[in-house]
Image (cartoon, rainbow, N blue to C red; front, side, top):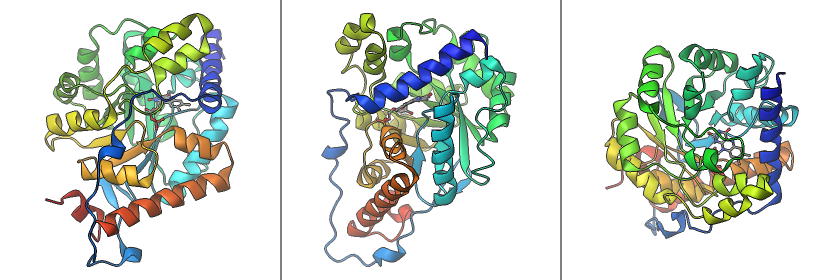
Length: 337
Ligand SMILES: Cc1cc2nc3c(=O)[nH]c(=O)nc-3n(C[C@H](O)[C@H](O)[C@H](O)COP(=O)(O)O)c2cc1C
C-alpha cells in the first residue's frame, strides 16, 4: 500500500472504533417516531403471507432493506464486509460497501472481493463525490464497480464531514458538471447519497438534472459524521460539538427527495432508521428502500449469528407493520391513498 492508502485504511478503522465506542448520534430527532402508521383492527390479510418483495433499479429484493455503506479497505473492514455481504446474499437485500478510495489509491484488487462469499447479492460500489475533484476519473469508478461486481455506484456527498475531518478534502467546486460527465461514461446507475446531514431540495434537483438514477436521503438524526470526525482528533472536537445538530432531519430530507423527484427516480431513506418499523414509516412516506448503517455494524460486531437475528427481527417488524395497517404486500402498503 502507498502511504496515502495506509492513512485512508487507518482512518476507516478509527471510524469503526469511534462509532462502536461512543454515542455518535446527533441531538436532533430524525423524525421517524413522529410518523404514526394507521392501525387496522381486522386486516383482510394473513401475516405469514405478507409479501415484502420489491424492485430497485430493476433488481429484485426480498425486502426493502439496504445495508448502508460503511467499511472495507482494512483487514478488519474486509472481515465485516464479508459478514455483511453474506447476510445480503442470504436474505436477498441490498448492500453498499464503504468508500473504495483505499483500493483505488493502492490499486489493490484483493480488496472488496465479496463475490466469493456473496455470489448473488445486490452490491453497490462507493466513493466520495469530492474525489472527482481529486483526480478520480470515470475509468477509476468503472474499475471499482468491476472489482466489486457491483450493479450501481454510490457517490456520497459529505461537505460537513470533510470540513471537520483534519485531513478532509475541502474543494467541492464544480462537482455537478463532473457528476453529469461521470454519469454519461459509466455503464451502471449512479446513486447520490448524503452521509447523515440530509439532501436539500436544490441538491435533489441538480442531481436529477445531472442524470443521477436514485437518491439516498441520509438525513440527520442517526450517526453524525461531523461529530464522528471531531472525536477522531482532539483539536477538531470543539467543531464536532458545535456542528453536532447540523443538517436536515431524516424525515424532512426524505420528503425533499420524494417531492423533487416526483416519481422520476426512486429514493432510499436513511439516517437514524433503527428498526423495521422505521423502514415501514419510510416506505409509507414514499421511499423504495430503507437503509441502516450503525445498527448493522453493531449487530455484526457481536458476530454472524447476532447479525442474522437482528435482521430477522427487523424484517418481522416490517411485516407486522404492513399487516397491522391492513395490507397484504409492500406495493399496496406503498400506494396507500
Ligand atoms: C462506521 C461507518 C462508516 C461509514 N462509512 C461510509 C462510507 O465510506 N461511505 C458512505 O457513503 N457512508 C458511510 N457511512 C455513513 C452511512 O452510510 C450512513 O449514511 C450514516 O451512518 C447514517 O446512517 P445510520 O444513522 O443508520 O448510521 C458510514 C457509517 C458508519 C457507521
